[in-house]
Length: 407
Ligand SMILES: [Mg+2]
Image (cartoon, rainbow, N blue to C red; front, side, top):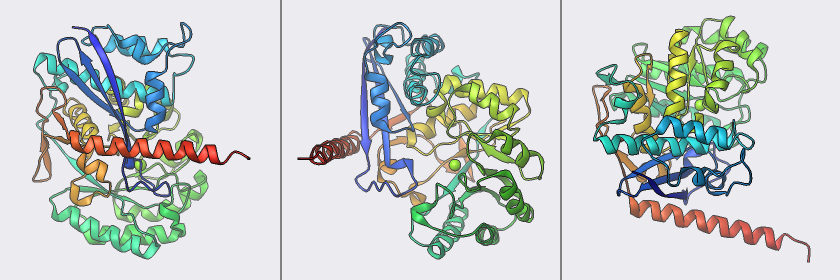
């Protein structure tokens, strides 16, 4: 079997608001086709026009080869060898960042293809089933315009998550810092009040995580704020500090008792080694697309296992990434939860409509994902609509650049 063509679908939600704090408003879906008629599907979480350029750009020299060029004609079943070929062949442009995130979408599609060719679920190629079920958690991030509305919506959504049967939820409490939702502004002390309200709403017999999305500028500010949060029995606090402040992470992770989680933006196991060994976080959160695909996410899981750390994959994309995370979790006993959002708790139309995965929650648990492959079905009508919206936005942007030139 040989790879015959690769398609990149750049997608945008018609409601896309660049002032909103959600990367679920855009997407890139790749389809890898073979000469035997099989197709693999993958996606990744990075600006989709940038990812498409990373994949489609022709190469110019031996250490700056084109991703698409390297894959056309190759045997798609050789997944790990192709990862190495892509990593080495793009080394002068890649190694970290957008090129690795783009490789992530291709690698996810290759895993889908290989497992489909074998008629098996993807997790069979990630080490096989290591558990009977997976526990999903609901990520709660209402999109509203004021702090009071945010507090009320978050409490209402937490109650709803519990009513839907979830055993765990994560509150996105970000009224300050670079990720502040739609310009919400509140103090660190007010954040404590929101967490208290959410904890009161769900009760103590419910797993609660908090994501503060880089809210604190430094370790001292973070430590003085989150020491107040001990009473809330949080499973973790996610990304309290700027991503590159590993010395700060070390202090926050070792000078107070709440476990610290991070890793959603990182590319490759090498960045995770820094986060785990220098930053000393207790929970590693690879985003499967961004880290470099299922091949690289599995390596991160193995490195975390040796260190006795917990895995909770990050994902903020569609059912394609949810399925990939479910397959990774199926083969990873130290993966405590996966992020999982039912349509009732989701704002993005793109996220709700683009794809479906065969995953149903029962008693707060998901059974292992069925194959073959990732077990994902694309909604072609929705994909065409989101692709059209992306083309429209691109055309508008080009005409804006043109008219901005001096006469
Ligand atoms: Mg996060």
